[in-house]
Length: 101
Image (cartoon, rainbow, N blue to C red; front, top):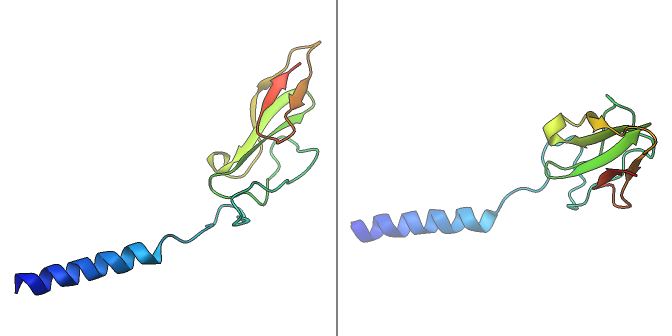
């Protein structure tokens, strides 16, 4: 009896692990590719960002305002801070970093 029980438990665990996890999710239009999709070249504070998966994120500038957008911000551009003049907000080529130069 115990052997049958263990066999059933192992079979269920095996099937559970073989099925894996579903990709994507409801993260504001996940691309499923694991890469963040560009939303806009000129994002504005408060705008929605599209094409991001639940683990993706982007950085942007609205004038001298530093911003980010991800699932943590409910896929809305949120303020990180501001660059004080004469420095200017600058986004890295991959849109994953931001600095004041």
